[in-house]
Image (tube, rainbow over all chains, first blue to last red; front, side, top):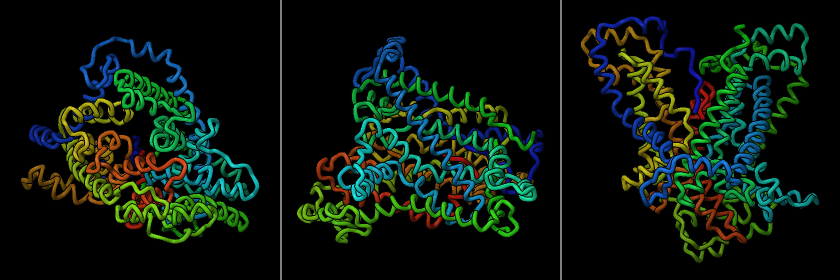
Length: 314
Length: 314
């Protein structure tokens, strides 16, 4: 989960400096703060912090849920390093991330620019965001049906035009691509909306200047829109990459990891190790590795894309 | 990070369209731009329409007419069958499986779990957000930073130990077990509300302190009413998120009394006969799970779109 803050203060303007000023009621406020924080702190400690440490500990154990965990040092990690299913899951996850994020970002950018240039309709925005509000499971099932080999409308249409039918989910080479495109459909409008908001924040006068200079659509996009959108684009990329790395629901209800290992993404493999083979220690070690990978990607992307700087302020 | 205020986009949509230089002027560009938008909207809506079309079709008759754009042999049979209102004979006659499936029960379970999570999480998170935004105490920002770290931890990492915990508490297959880990707080909810609380004019609060109001009274009678629109927005976003959640409720709620809609749908799919699936029944189930979201979107569309535009939520 990631958030962009709201810089404008919608409920009245107060300079930040005032906050830093020392107040007379500090002690009474500490007491109040403790009381206000009790429920949330219990939730944080019991269901976020403690499980995080416990997960780290379990990754160094042999644990099948039935008997207490036994400490085995780095054995799980050593086993993972030579586990072909793990390396394969990493490979297919990366394939998914590249296909999903690549197509999604390009299409969302195009859609955001279309909206910025041609419509201000709230209804259009609501409609394109609708798929994002529908559960992954529902979206996966609907597309599984649309793509069904025997009766799905897509194959029926292909058949009607005399084109060979395609086993979208059943073909080893196509399954992951199909899942990537299904999730592009679900996330396109949402991502476009984030980018559209970024476009709205670009000062209008730069477009006026471009118009005066007689720049065409493409020129405006390349020389004005894209550079000024870069910080938002960078933020969106970090969020979507980290999000799509954790693909699970769609796989669980459509292919179940198959055909062969073609869609056994890392999150799905963790689930299978833990709940189908009751290998909680091993699964926890996989989860630790996933977390390290995600942290590294987020850091790297932030560095490379200079996500925190705006071209406007330079 | 770049930020886009909801207000700004509202203002932009209100501003005279003719004066907005970021809207295209050329007639040719307008034509092609709008055409492209229409195509995107059609691609967005077609799968959703197909869900409706299939849910009102006779599953048996549908096999003969895969290309029919209207429901084949219009019937309420699939809806009745997944709501447990049809006899096995009636279900079999329309190409259902005859297995008992009760989405009405799953709907009640989903409403119970999501309401429980949303009400408590938003309440406790706003209390915490108040302590982080408007009270002055030593170490406040450090504690807040620790809470924020939890935002970066991927779900699957805490999911395994949380499952062990809920199992040890004897809460497997209960609505409470599904709700518990997110009932007390999420870092996102606190972060979201803190942003708005920071903007509240402090002089009102100081005046109340001088009048001898307790912090609880200030929170209840000043801060909550002022931030009510944002609190409702957060509640909507969280409700939708848990409504759509799959993996956690799938692991924790497997009985008829604790199965959520997404889980029931996944199980229904895995049980439908491979060679002769009940597509109409599946789409009817998907429809039942999706309709509450459509209703929320119709009622609160502007709020939901605005909140996603102003803060990237994932």
